[in-house]
Structure formats: C-alpha cells, structure tokens
Image (cartoon, rainbow, N blue to C red; front, top):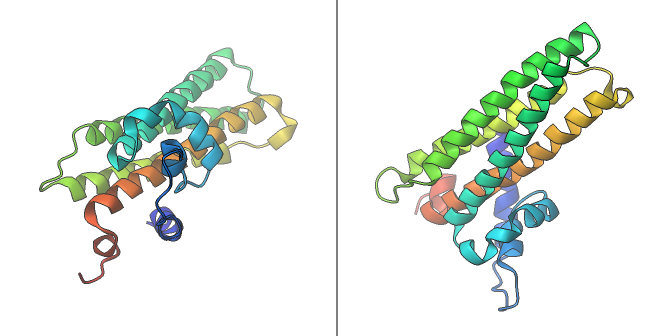
Length: 200
C-alpha cells in the first residue's frame, strides 16, 4: 500500500497540473507519460503505441504492462545465462543470483497475470476488483526486482553485478511507469473522489 500511496500522491498532483487541454500537435505518448516518474523512458518505450492508444487509459495501461513484460523477459534470459555460465564469484553473490532468478520469475508471473486481466477488463461489475488485482501484482513485480538487486554485494567493483543490476534497475523503472499508467486507468474509470474514499 505504501508504493500505491506514493504513486497516488504523485498522480494527483500531475493530473491536476495537466488539466489544460493540449493542441492537436501534442503527442499522445507525451500526454500519457506525463503521469509517470520516468517520463523520457516512458516516451521512448511506448512511442510506437501512440496512434493506437491515443487518449485511452486502458490501452496505455495494456501497452505499459506489455512493454514491461518484454523487458523483464529479457532480464530473465540474462539472469539465466549468468546462472548457467557459473561466473558469479562469492558464496553470497551466487546465493543472491539464485534468489534473483526466483524474484524475476515471480515478477514475470505477476506481469502475465496483470496483462491477462487488462485484456479482459469488465467495466460493469468487476472492474474495480480487477484493477486492484493489477495494481497489487504490478507492485509485487516492482518489489521482486528491488529484492533481486538488494541481495548482491560488491557494488560497482564487480562488472557482472553492475551489468545485472543496471538491467534490473531499468526494468524496474519501466515497471514503475506501467504501475502509474495502470493507476491512471483506475482513476479515469472509477473517479478520483471514489478512489480516495471521499463522499460523492
């Protein structure tokens, strides 16, 4: 809930700031990414979805999770290569790598579940519960990635650890953006006051 609370605070301020309607030349992807923490990365990773998603929060949410899934799959392949190569030095780092494999796999599972729900959202009775699940799974995926990084020792002195941590960190930034886009989808569909628990 702490992660979601922080995102909510950020999104409220950003959404209120972006009330002004932009001109025709304003990019859809820039508009969508304005609610994310890592905006440049968001624009770079999601620009190809701009014409299709336009101003649809649900489409941007799906795009964000889809891109995140691809990125984390790439990290998973890299981690598995490191495991099979047996190049990681130190007992603690080898144990951390084994834990990282599990963390990244858990993140992948959470992302798959999130994308599956986003593809079949029910705007009638079950939407709120579905989006709560998506936000929970995306938060868990973000935590999985942080846990992977935190297990290693040696920091920047070890090139292999540095390379791995950089890849996981980049994936976590993209996951963070996906979480923000999913939260915007929830806010757009349920109403800001309702989400905050205020009386209508």
